[in-house]
Length: 253
Ligand code: MG
Image 1 (cartoon, rainbow, N blue to C red):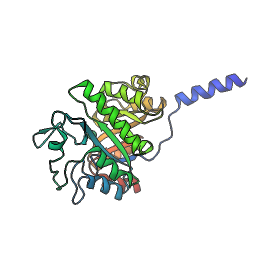
Image 2: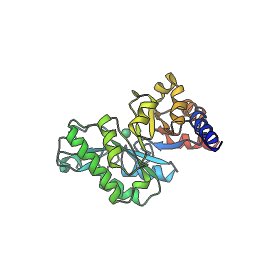
Image 3: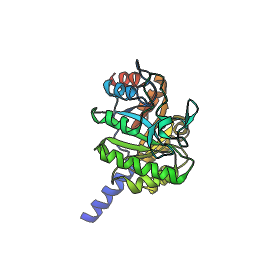
């Protein structure tokens, strides 16, 4: 009898939807619209923390001489992140006057704040270079004692598998490309599906399927109150947005 009850409980856990909770606010590349900030700047990280965003998202590259730097695109003002030395990359000025930060500088600033981090590992030309970037990033986050406050995302399928291998068990790792079913992501051993709103509007059933598998569901990058409301109404767990202040106000209503 006990066995039957246990089996029924397992089946119900798998079939019933998880309880909806308030979505987490992710400031995409930090709160870069704040006064004096720029995308992926330390000021944008500090401002994201100051307005009460749950996470600041940032992007990591490894330079030709193996320094980890924070920037979105492969090039910044004509300088290639992956194929240039760190001295040239970090000499570049962001739009707010800061120098393009190293990961070490970024984590050093994050250490004194309470905001959590979404660390995106960029897809590098060289798989070997990318793997080394991941290994060094995971190590540095550990050295800063930020493992409990850092989650990962990468468009690289090899990168996802490397993160699963290198990160402590239970680390949140999300895949954003939109080309895998929830069941396939679960099989890969990651914790979340982080897709574009257009993908999930086309496949809204994936949200419940992901939740039933224990996967978190995120959406990027949301820019309008209407899209934010759609995410709230559809039990999305993480909302990545360029206007975190508007989303925070909407969630407080
Ligand atoms: Mg990013």
